[in-house]
Image (cartoon, rainbow, N blue to C red; front, side, top):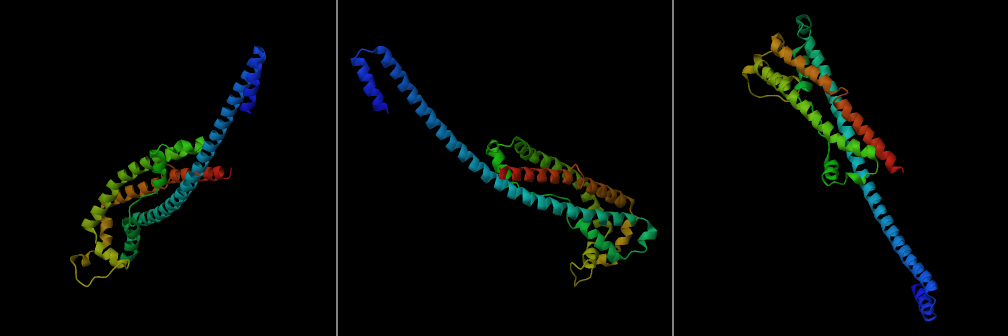
Length: 255
């Protein structure tokens, strides 16, 4: 096509038809410009397709990570519900009339969920941190999804601050029990292990710890903390955020 225009151009020049030559020259320029624009469009389309392919990979990775995190938060909520139920039961034992009707073994069983683990939530964040730290969050076209993913880290930070504040109450609760109760009797009562040797703590009855007002105060504070954790501002809030992110990812993948 370019050779064709060149032949016409030479003919116009030899015939001294400048106006016609100028017209064809403009046409040739337009043709070149159109060719460049088409090439740029093809290149842009290729880049766009590559970006969308990368976006899909990230969406699938985030979907897997947040689905796992949803299972983790559900397990944390369930574990904390058991802790709350045990704490409610133990708080009733500060009524001596109730305490006298309960066996030492039953008390140990109720202490197990309280002292067996701390209130915690440890999600997987490898994919999330990689996307944010590498600056690739903008690859995701959905603005709402980008914002929700970015704010999830802030929610985790807030949760960790609250859980760290609860550590003081939990540590003091354990300290009082270590001073006035018997861990040995607790682990034996729940069948965790037996001992072949004698101990001075064998004569300790864990019922006597319910005579301590200090222990009741920390137990009540820990109970209230556990309930708040499962509420709408902490575990409940994170669960809602995770479910929202998963739903938005599913909608994006269906497009």
